[in-house]
Image 1 (cartoon, one colour):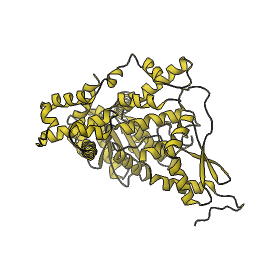
Image 2 (cartoon, helix red, strand yellow):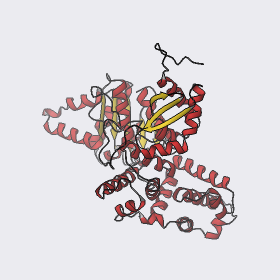
Image 3 (spheres, one colour):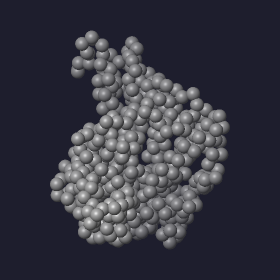
Length: 457
């Protein structure tokens, strides 16, 4: 067994906990580990009980209910002398808070290393990983750890509010903290265009060397909203030249867009071909479990006291826009504070969101979803629910199962009974459609359209 004793014969609790985390990670989902386990901190050892702290009472209750046994057995496996685990709340808030997180809740990179261009709240630790974004997060981390050595360029794309900008800032924050000597330049295309226009307007004889040096001398260039170059010929020309120079010298380039390269046909072909040189990574629409995890993590970091019913209610109401979903959570917390409520309940949430089209999510049922899919694909209901197995019918049936499991809290067995199938068929359909959406942009858009139809948008 490893030696866990320091010079003063005291147990090295942090070392034990780090090894226990490795064991725990083998037995819980990535999302559960990221949201609930990783942020626990070692406080003390009382007898044979390891004391761990979390930041909220709701987080404490969730951890005790769902993960305490796994944590205890993992710690015991690492060090046999520790037989139990206690979860405490390190600092319980007196009231519901709606302000931005403080330095105590999210630890930014040291100010000396952190570029002012990057939001210190947007890190890899605060980004919730799920099936829809595992690949893009892995690619982003690889680039951050080894700029210019792996994927170059890294092209991140996905719909509005899914976390593209968060990942760009996470890359920037990681590099500026761990590799402070590297010059990291970040700019949305609108800013890039504005600086170019100003340089051209003020420079004599059209010389814009200062502007060029800022971007062409970067070790890492991170650019957002690349689709905004469409229709801007001067911007495209300058970006093309800078891209070539950086790429030739092995400098890392990261860009983000709201659509894949294949749909940026209005950009010059010489640019789109270069954007496709590296790796294309799609941020998909988060599935229900991931949406719940995102809201739980935000509540945890912000120390919001929110019931699980409210978290699920919001997660089921907004299916395609993480930013909108988080905004709704902030709204209900702020409303609770105004009403002098110490916890956000369903009654508070419904009142706070009464002016937002959330109620429609409550009226969605399996019948509506079936009708929606039939209408969308122009097929008959008895064909969808029957035994016909033509390619188009089989796909529509899988999509229907996927949507029901995504939008409704119905047991898998019950979903299977709708189609005269067992629950394993439902699980397979959900997995198949989820995986296909990552590769097939057209299918992802179609499913998103159906979700919008069902939510009355």
